[in-house]
Length: 247
Ligand SMILES: [Ca+2]
Ligand SMILES: [Ca+2]
Image 1 (cartoon, rainbow, N blue to C red):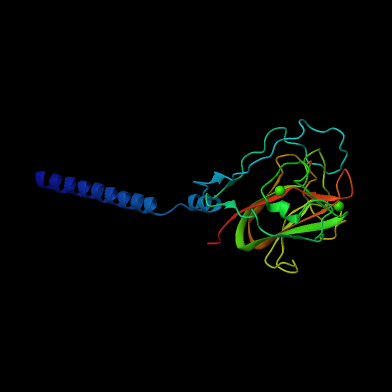
Image 2: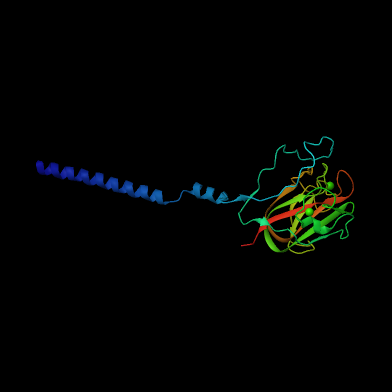
């Protein structure tokens, strides 16, 4: 009787041990297996650790408040506060300073094309270049291909104005005949002829207009415009291109 009880108890202990062992193995296997949703989420999220705001030196503001007398359609509502910082990897820097500029109007009415990349963003006389009426463009040669993160453009900010058909492109060759990436286009009726753009018109301020270049690669940056809300001419004070070496 005692013998039988011992054997019975032993069996129970063995069964319990086996169940415990199987449970442990199963739990371990689950723990080691990466769960699908987590790894998917990691792929979808860009790691912005260490990213910094790009350093944009702003010129003095020439007017305050929101202008009420500009009646332009498809107009972006002013933010009413400073533009939020634009974050980029820490090796992103200003790559356009002092770089050569060419234009569809190579003999400007006022100023010199080199003003566009000289770092001076003030609105006063002697700081802006005035180009011929209607469709005109300017092109910056960065010297080599970069990964471009942002382009900031100041057309003219002595008074509130809207420049029309603002189109920003990045290219790998100076004539923009192929491999052209358009990063901004507010020509919503294709009056310029480079295609319909869905971006909004905006009022020029001392902040300039920041265009997200979304890491496109290229050597040449071209900006188009087609008159403004004040007259038929085209103006530039500065274009700042921010990018980094291609890895
Ligand atoms: Ca300038
Ligand atoms: Ca248009």
